[in-house]
Image (cartoon, rainbow over all chains, first blue to last red):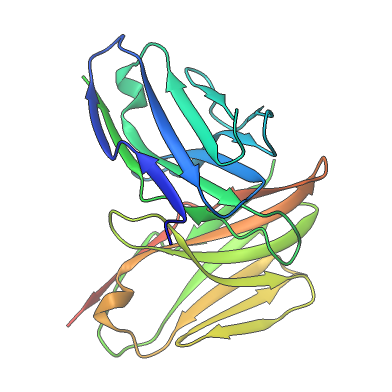
Amino acid sequence: NAGVTQTPKFRVLKTGQSMTLLCAQDMNHEYMYWYRQDPGMGLRLIHYSVGEGTTAKGEVPDGYNVSRLKKQNFLLGLESAAPSQTSVYFCASSQQGVWTGELFFGEGSRLTVL
Amino acid sequence: KNQVEQSPQSLIILEGKNCTLQCNYTVSPFSNLRWYKQDTGRGPVSLTIMTFSENTKSNGRYTATLDADTKQSSLHITASQLSDSASYICVVSALSGGSYIPTFGRGTSLIVHP
């Protein structure tokens, strides 16, 4: 019962390098989200998707791009990494609704940009 | 702007003691409020969900309350255990453009000492 799986779990980049974080969910959820978590800041929404082929900006989208080509996958890309993007990234998914809407999170991906 | 404020930022208690965490929000239009528990190095996991008409909800030793008039919620932990050491995050969802968008508090870090 995998739930939400993020890869990779750890990555170290040099400034200017690019990378992609992959999120996969096996619960057939419509909504998927990418968050970053920094000490003292809580979870901040980067981008989200309300269904296959859709994406939308969150609170802190600059420097990131996303794609949702398949319903079960949500990719987060960094085209030119900066030290300010050092953070722990969490992917989440949900099936929307007043009584549902529970966010199911992955285990996180720790990214360090030198 | 939707906001969720949590207090205290951190809390240290002895095993077996009770504690109460607070959450104040200015989110509109209100849909639901969830409390999440985040263990160190893991993704958050939902503890409770409360909607507008609910005042109290329990999940084992965790009891959440909601006062929709004052826009306040609390999470009470009874007979604390070492495994309760974690960050507790209050998340309030609002209906926006047909989607339920969650707003996160910064969390309360709870440490339970033996």
